[in-house]
Image (cartoon, rainbow, N blue to C red):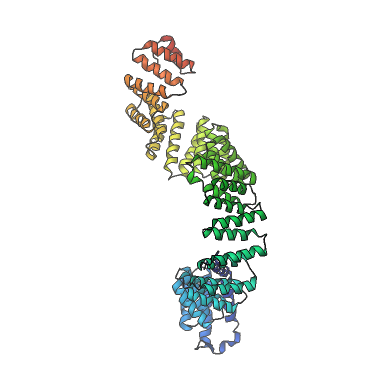
Amino acid sequence: MKVSESRYFKIGRRYTPCAAAVLTLVFCLLILSSNGQDKKVIVVAGKHLTPTDSATVKQLFFSALREKAIDNNNMATEFFDRIMQIDPSNDATLYELSIIKKLKKNYAGAQDLLERAVTVNPDNEWYWVALADCYEKSNSYAKLENVFNELIRLDPEKTDYYYDKANALFYQGKYDEALAVYKKIEEQTGITDDLLANRQKIYLKQNKIDLAARQLEQMIANDPSQIKYYLFLSQLYSSNNQPDKALKILQDGEKIKPNSGLVHLALADIYRDKKNIDASYNELNLAFAIPDLDIEQKIKIIGGYLPRFPDPNARASALELSKLLITAHPNDARAFSIYGDMLLQNDKSKEARVMYQKSVALNAQVYEVQEQLVRLDLADNDIAAAIKDGENSLSLFPNQAWMNYLVGVAWLQKKDYHKALDYIKNATSLELQDKDLLSQSFSALGDCYHDLKDNKSSDEAYDKALTYNPDNAFTLNNYSYYLSLRGEALEKAAKMSKHSNELQPKNASFEDTYAWILFRQKDYAGAKIWIEKALADDKDKTATKMEHYGDILFYLGNVDSAVDYWKKAKDAGGKSPFLEQKINERKYIE
């Protein structure tokens, strides 16, 4: 049974397992307490048990409980069934069998056993509680109502049973009867929030909005300082299309407690519904600045902006709200991580990196934040920080494949290829499903092996990377370029390089690679077309591309222009082994 929260399930949780243990102990004591009475004839529900029968039942019952205690429910069931053959009205056994059937999700079978148990022993509270669970599972509300009548008979002071009875009446549509039960609860406990909420639900079902409102107005009049009643009443008006009344009551509540974050959030909702976006956003700002308002609520509100992030105004609003978090919650790591996320969404990566650093300093146990930090370290080309942050993270989360890869990439950029290999190999052994990670990891291994002059291992790693992602443009480019430098498998290199340019057109580095492969294939005219594309798309005017252009021009017979471009390459900082010699001797040297 459920209202604002499920009172019925509270009973179920309270009962198992401790109550079961207590009840079993009671049964055992009852059986053991017979002592010398075994010689007497015991009468149970009209059936006479001989002393031998009684002794057998007692022995079987203990054996069944012993098997049940070690989760051997099949054997326990056999013992209990044998008891039922001797004593079909043994209510303790009926109850124990019902528990086993419940464990097997056989609620219908458990219900039948419990109905028999309460017939034999109608004054056992726990039998009725267990039976209520079965009726609740099958939505048998009329029967459930009767169960709670019995439970109230057994324990008339237990408020939960009255709530459960009212719930059963509610689900049968017996609203006036349910209200009568709530009246009894009020006599026991006085007015409580649970009682208000349950009554409100009935009034709304009966479409008695005015009656529901008068009840809350009376509560406000009795205790004007209780801001929750203003919130209840505003929600009542708002949910029944009376926004002006909802706004008025919230404004009254704000006067009573101007620093209530919940009031400001409710006002933000009302203004949003009334299409007053500026007023709504202003209320959100006021709410977010209040430290007492739970940060989780604020984070959920910021998350609500995410679907609207193609709109720059939505991104900016989320950014401003998240900034308020770090002021209101300066010791909460979540505040800084969320602010970092929003900075990143607004293309402020350097500021985001600082926020992630602060978040990790406050709480190093959130892996996702640490990974984001290391990615930004690498993006800022702060290799030392990437290694430090990444290895700190791996000391806490050693089995994170992506972090092993990122630290490996950092060592690769630091040109410590052996350390890079160790971390990147870890990544490939820890992750077997993520094709993106595996593709990038084997590609990085290819780069490492190339720099270690292990061409065979390098080629194998690149080939494996392409099995996971044949469209990895950077792998295609690097692999094909290194093959061209060695003058090996040039047809394969040309095919891969051409595909990389199809995947990422106007990439100057990729265009230069393709030009150089064509040059090695002696297709100088084709090479000239592609190197000119590379130079046109090269914003940095790198020395390598200008030198390559000079090499191509030389073989096309334009020596003067070739020398001019070699000189431009030198002026641009080119330091290839033969560049100076090419200029001095005015010829291509390999």
